[in-house]
Image: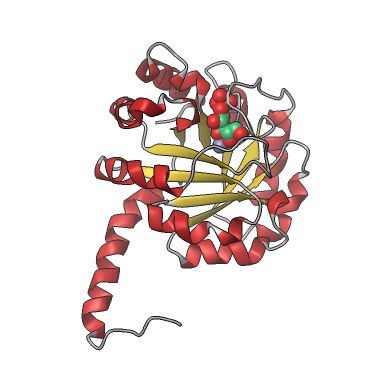
Length: 249
Ligand code: DX5
Ligand code: ZN
């Protein structure tokens, strides 16, 4: 049963306005050129400290990889972990970038929105309800992203060009960190950029100082990096090197 609106509607509107004000700068982060460290490769026994470390180096988008053991073989983390770092990230002016590698993503978006996600990306291959899911994510107050696997043609997003905020082009097969960058990816990113026009393109997988420049030149603006950041001896220096190669903040 839907919740009844409170009698004092003006109070409710004030609260909504306050929330919008806090969210606006976080949304703008997704419209800039940014490296997004993926906590998949972090040391989970000291997750907060690892997030602090990359944010001190300038990171503002923290990428959260959710895997369900069905869409991809591994099971990783869920909304509890996203919620555990959301305040820390938001208090430092950052945003949570959730990447759902799960079947039936439409059944789980509300949990992630409540956990503090600022952007929720799901896979075009994971649901027949792309349009409904993009709109539902936006109704929950988040940016909406649509991802495609390496074997999926860019035309899979053609009917969503005006509905998605972020288009995620996988540059490895989803499921694991530390895989090599697929060499044909810059060409695919170029074709995706032609298709989505002003839409933001995110790349994910095998991004490091040697590969970031090629996808940046092809039109990518958001660069997810897991093992190249958290697998390095000095994650802050690794973050800076990738950002420099990508021409990102
Ligand atoms: C892979 C995940 C990636 C992963 C990238 O399925 O979506 O975000 O963390 O890891 P690296 O940067 O190590 O390829
Ligand atoms: Zn990811």
